[in-house]
Image 1 (cartoon, rainbow, N blue to C red):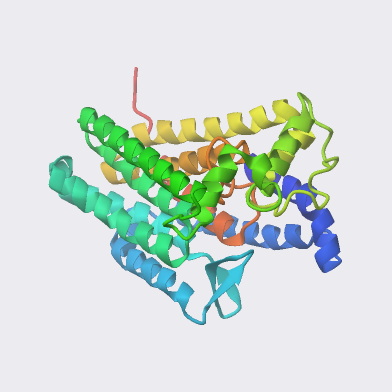
Image 2 (image 1 turned 30 degrees about the horizontal axis):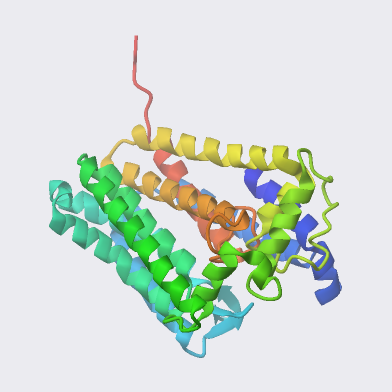
Length: 365
């Protein structure tokens, strides 16, 4: 709850200038996010009081519906925002299908792993579980061009498989192989882009070039990253003070979305950034405690899936903002602007709370 309300405060601080220029109302983004947050709280409370086993019977239908929603992005229901076509609008309500896929995938994989039992530890089981994740990941990658969500979806499946299978050595080998292939792909794209013949159409290759040398692309691809680094560097240890950021005054594009962490660093300094990271660590630690004490495997896997989702998204966002990895366009959970995101993040928290409420204290006397 602290992260949620801190997010609203930082959203207003970050977006008020741009909202005043674009809409004549400094609280425009705050009001929209507050409405989504209230709806998210209602969803969280509702999901937290309904036995989590009930959601298991809806896992497959919900998963299939989420895939249909991804396809709808290419229909007239889909629309483009900020140069990306990743949203649909139904009855006047905007929705990002990738966020729906994440929670439905967690439900489906938890159900599939429980049904398969020990079979999930075989290569056949691994292929089935990862296949269920790769289908929406590939669809999102090619239909919406959203690589960050595709990575998160694949990562959620990998984390849940890792927890469900005690044979850790094979996953270490798989991770090393994936990292090696990713490094090779980056190298190939980099060389192609540097030679002016990128096989991906240019934009991913240019992003890699801008990641390695943002100053050379300061007029286009590297501009946002460079401004974010300026914000982080100028914040110092204690920051300029809440509301005192300079980079949000038209210098840092879409500061309220992907780059909100850089404004936190500028206004609250390294100390404030450390406190935010510590809050996420505490949240993830509590989820780990709940997963370890869950009354059954299904409940434990639900919490592990949510924990994996939050952890991967936080790490990727901070890595992008600090230019540790190429810019992929990923939001910071509970803090970045996004109605669909906060709605389904709160719904996932509701699942965790539901499992937590099912834990019974054991007599130790």
